[in-house]
Length: 118
Image (tube, rainbow, N blue to C red; front, side):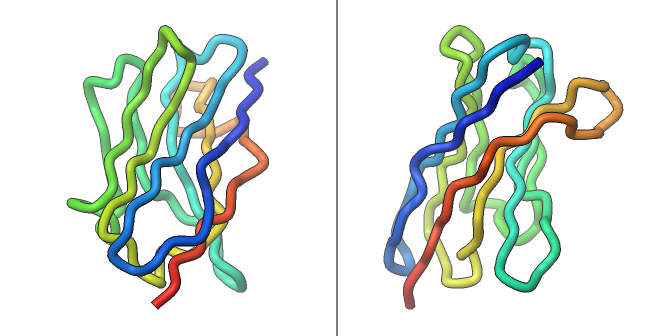
């Protein structure tokens, strides 16, 4: 079992930055992790992913070069540094854990709202 709690969301102006954190309990250090987001009226979409050790990351094209995913296994935290934010980044952001090893995310946090004003 893994418990996930996201923090760090808020309201920011376009061009600004936010850092999201996801505090995990359980076997966090063995799982690949990811951030997803869901905007009003839209499907949930993948934002960024990281393997268990932090040595491999992947990003959606829409956030490449602006967002950085990282993890601290000792502290059981996952992070998403978001720079150069745009209004279209407005969404609820979720962290998720893949306990299957097959790119299936089985544990989810409750989400944190990010709102970017123009």
